[in-house]
Amino acid sequence: MNQPPNTIREALDSAIAFLDTRGISGARLDAELLLAHTLRRDRAWILAHDDEPLTSHQTADFEAFISRRSEHVPVVHLTGTREFYGLDIDITPDVLTPRIETEQMAEWAIKYATKDSSLIDIGTGSGAIAIAIATHRPDLHITATEITDVALAVAGRNAKKHHTPLNLIKSDLWNNVEGIFNTIVTNLPYLRNDADLMPEVRKEPAVALFGGEDGLDLYRRFLAGLPQHLAPGGYLFTECDPWQHEALIAEAAKYGLTPIEQGYFILGFKKQP
Image (cartoon, rainbow, N blue to C red; front, top):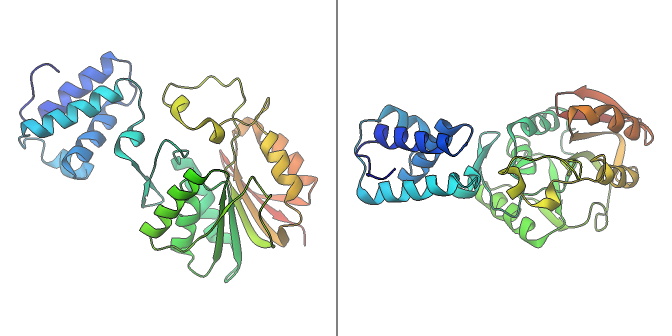
């Protein structure tokens, strides 16, 4: 990347080759996303206009992004946004980057939640799950919690951005939560403390990643406090690694929860009436 390229195509080819030499997986997609961000265009426009020339300023900005990406800085931390359930969600290093697999949690909550009922998102992070649900189910009364002020601030900005009123509460799991809810969603940290992580994942906030020796410590605490907050016949939707499903289902059964849905990462439960 020594000589500035002249066109979008040349810029992408140079960036992809550079990222490949640095061992960055998904180099082509990353380069396309970062160039789209640089030019304030979407990725489809970039691909349809690959013979467009770049200015020297655009080239310099793009190369700066590519240089940081080569150091394993996540793309989302460079662009500051991530699409989730069709929504543009602002992301900072203070919150977990929502994954596409987590969209299934929002999908099931949208499908199952009783009309005009209450829902709470425990550990909302960026607010992505709660906001996605609120966008498609404006009839729901939605509360979202976080343990840190910085994460709550990110969730608040995203809620305002998408015009979705959330009742935001600072809380360590159930500590400051009052009331009973018809639906509960949560994506708590579930990685083992000794998990071998990619460099990009290690840049996520540790408080949003690790859940003890088997990854389920926080889930045990969460489930212990759940009975007094989940209405009879209510729903719980949550996420963990597939190899943890059996243990989490067994733990949930202690509190009267029966599985109703099982995806690769996402589990759905119903509380016995």
